[in-house]
Amino acid sequence: MIDKELAHLIKMANQIATNLDYGDASELSANRVTDHIVRFWATSMKHKILNYAKCDGSELHEITKTAVLKLS
Image 1: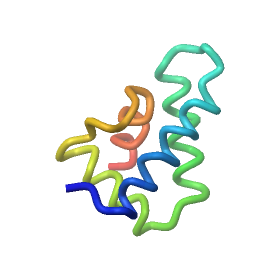
Image 2: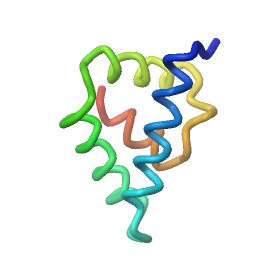
Image 3: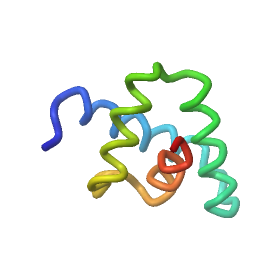
Image 4: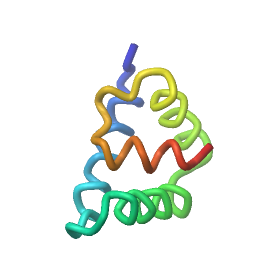
């Protein structure tokens, strides 16, 4: 189940992926998203979205899911 906080994290992560996707290979874009999340997100936020990506992740864009899974 997606609670309000998780929905917000998903929205933010997908927006970050959209903003950092410059048409490069998806792996490069995912690396940029991962770097952003590592640098700017609180640990609790990272854990919550990572758990979601591992269990379901259906609301995450492809690049976003790849990036989030790199947090583990």
